[in-house]
Amino acid sequence: TKKNPNEPEFLQAVLEVAETVIPFIEKNKKYQNKMLLERMVESDRIIMFRVAWIDDKGETQVNRGYRIQMNSAIGPYKGGLRFHPSVNLSILKFLAFEQTFKNSLTTLPMGGGKGGADFDPKGKSDNEVMRFCQSFMTELSKHIGANTDVPAGDIGVGGREVGFMFGQYKRLRNEFTGVLTGKGISFGGSLIRPEATGYGAVYFAQSMLGTKGDSFAGKTVVVSGSGNVAQYATEKATQLGGKVVTLSDSAGYIYDADGIDAEKLAHVMVIKNELRGRISDYVTKYPNAKYVAGARPWEVKGDIALPCATQNELNEAEAKALVANGCICVAEGANMPTTPEAVLVFQNAKILFAPGKASNAGGVATSGLEMSQNSLRLNWTAEEVDEKLKGIMLAIHASCVEYGADSTGYVDYVKGANIAGFVKVADAMLAQGVV
Ligand code: NDP
Image (cartoon, rainbow, N blue to C red; front, side):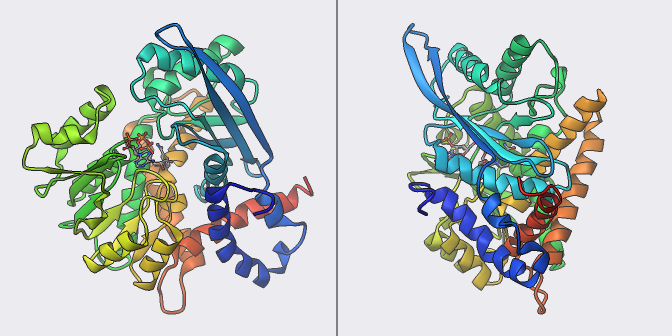
């Protein structure tokens, strides 16, 4: 706390890992030296910089840009860029810390990083977004590279922003390399990357349900968010026979008791991705659905909950409401959406609960597959990538069970994910000496 004042999200993420990893370290002598955990919570490097750009009125705007290069023990730094007015050092350090464990879990050689800016893309024109991205990349390009640090998208950074940043990197460096993932298909992107985080979260939930002989078929699913992760989680949950009844954004949620089927989801994608509108616009076309302003969807009855919006969006009271309503499975699509108190509610009720670093790792895993394709100068088919994604999610699930199951067979996925993620990074750090 003394070293990291005013960083509540970072401290929350570290505490959650420490609570499960310290007892493991105490039982395993090998990990008790060289200040391993102390070194893991210290970023390799933090870069903070001014991003000045000119808006459509000709006026100068200033934002703050960041890149947290957290840990490169097992591979180049890898992690997304977030553009949102709430972005600050604490949030990006928490995300970079989580990313280190998540990337380790994917079985691929990627270190942990995260970055972004307190820029708000809402209401900005395409030209403004492009000028911002170009200014942001002008500085960031000095610190990244295909073998050093490979950023991707996150909240507020999708295909459009990645494209603008890739264009600027190429212009500055005069090299065409896989320096970013989430690229367009015509310039080195991977099929299934846009779908991967949402699909992966549902594959993970399906594996958890499988341990109980259950599945998505016939289940009611409550989803939060309406961005990239929420959209594809909805698509896959529906394909597997679930009925998704909610979506949300920071202003409220929609409840559609008939289910958000493929046609309705296609309309959500137009609203959010093309018109860049609000989820409340959904009820204009589907008046049977209701829009609830200023609330989150956890008051809605469902068997499975998939929080896919942002950190700390599901609190203790909301967790109790979900359990009381018969929820049996929660898989985080977002990063740390469930508060620590809410996690305890799920664990005490012994329902299936997966932390984002396990259940949303499909996105970065597929980014890893994009890096492989870029290095090979090959493109795999959608089926090939989807198969690999499924295989990785199954492997992550198996690691969580290996380290998280107790003698009664109950799986603590938080403990399992933290320890499995820790072991690989710790082994690499020990082998590389005190650095
Ligand atoms: P998008 O920008 O596509 O969508 C974000 C969604 O979350 C929007 O519906 C947005 O609503 C909502 N949201 C953002 N901030 C808040 C807030 N403060 N309160 C309530 N709602 C909010 O982002 P993604 O779908 O890519 O990311 C969602 C989550 O998934 C994040 O936690 C991200 O870190 C995580 N994640 C994403 C991965 C990816 O591959 N994209 C990979 C792994 C994790 P609004 O429009 O009102 O802001």
